[in-house]
Length: 98
Image 1 (cartoon, rainbow, N blue to C red):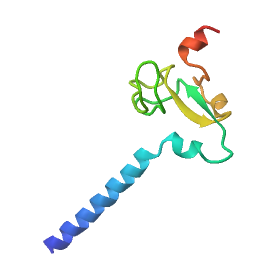
Image 2: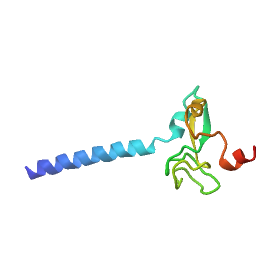
Image 3: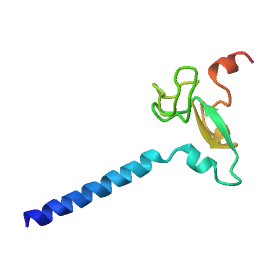
């Protein structure tokens, strides 16, 4: 019976890790390529570690250090940002210059 329990535990663990991998690898780029969906960069609403790409402070997606940094961005379908408090279509430096 221990062998059966071990096999069941191993299968459950593999399923859990697979599900976790699927959820963490689904980036905006996956849905932004869908034909007909127009997107825009929306600044100031990304959670720490959930930004979509590089900024002046780093070179890659997922490197935002704090929530709602006004220079970090995510892709969203065009027009959605108008419904989100704190969202901007320009980074903080560009917004100040206007």
